[in-house]
Length: 237
Image: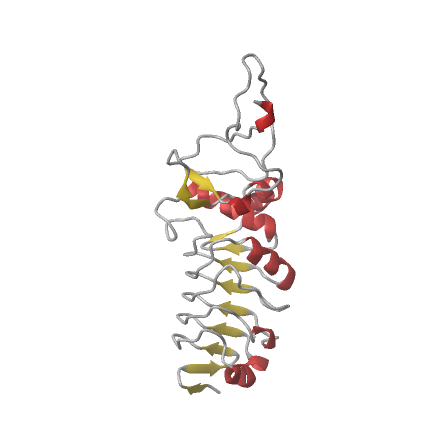
């Protein structure tokens, strides 16, 4: 039997709470509907957290499109949740989210992140192209190998095999808004690990005293404006 009051509609396990201006799930909604809800739609709110979701123990589908969920969003353990729609939120970095989903949502098979900065396609930026999106998909499928569907496309066996082989190398370094003195974008300091280094040495090397070296950088910048990847230690110049 359907129940409806103050914009909340519940019908046979489906709970719809669209455009209620919620920043979190109200306690009375949790108390009344959590135990029997299998599909929850809270699109077009202003959600910034998912506290209270842990009470929806039978939840199978979650739709939170067009909210304000950011990089700090975390999921409680939900063993039946197989579909998560997070389109058009405020997610800029997916690392923490993917780690969390991998641990907390063992049944997850369908995920959509379209419209977030972390999902590099035309919906998030006109500067992104198909190559950016392809690398993103390989990285997500590497982190969540059980996905069957990512965004608007199914995950093929061929794509999963490629993700297993090279997905770990597809993490894209996001560039900061600030630039260097030459006008080039500056890499975020949070993405750099290992010993500190600068593009050029602080002092000049003596004539004839030079040598080249190959090094390994943990992250690679991919993009249409990339000039290649260089990694030079000061002491080797």
